Length: 470
Image (tube, rainbow, N blue to C red; front, side, top):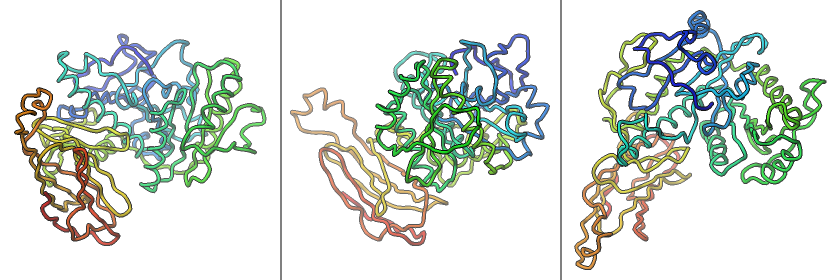
């Protein structure tokens, strides 16, 4: 996954990757490409590009039971390279694959015991915002487009998470952001009560000898926070494979494995890589969780599922997709989408301001309360209410931040630039088996941070209207 020529414009038609003007090395690798640049662009239509292989086997790919393997992680960590190794596709040395939007690879059946396999890949998290992503270089445009990019990355990673039977997280020399990704995926699996094999591949592309890798294992991997690892023993992969190593996380409900991949064909690569690939291949061969896989249908379902969390649309308005052929995914209604001004999700995206005044805020759910924190320095008023809509509990907080009137502050340009005015925060929380108690939320103010605590208890889905809070 790296820099290569971008895909050709198609005008909504199916594109054959074997066209003479297309770079075969970079584009023929994937069988389906949906080059999603921005989640907002669904109102214009997301184009779908197919390889000749997919077109010839369309009915089989859509109707047969398929084992789906999803790759998650930061950009440029080698996700596509790992797919190529598992698929036994020898890419030219130094060649890079551009992963654009959502990309899907259907490897040949022979290498997977004649089981139908689909690899789900994307550009990953923390990709750069490029000049070609927006119309000019103004800072406000960059800020807006960078937020759109983060939301789009989140949507793609969530799609892969929910539509994969096996998850592979590819990291490099482990960083704190990669630790956070691994931890969030583990928490999400527990919270959603999903059973998926999880493989973390430490792709040590800079390591060429075994001692370097051993040092990494001893000084980084085994000492990392949130990893309680022990070595996997007595694993019969192949009598010819005598080298390599695998760790699994103790005291976890999920099967979570850490594996090593070093610089290919180096001393370290020859020691670790074959073992890692065979370990994953054997797990694939034993997995029986096969289901049908309609790409267009599953993308629409995931978009509908996340729309309430992402967009400023009326909570009772239905999203309607255009009746387009399977070469385009287009939202017909509403005609325009606006991202919500603020949210926090599993990957830590936050602070979404589009227009007007809105204070920074965050929310979280504990076993006995929903906690909302709002940044409002100075004087303010608040009114809190609870509503119910479909599968969501809606916390609505209406308020007003007053203009500072102290003459000393008015003379200070820094304080004069503070925003003020009326605001409305709408926080949808997926309804679970709990009720909100019939009482005002707990209130605390310190250092300009307002904390509202909504007490909850296990029970039915009754919703109580809250009282005014000042």
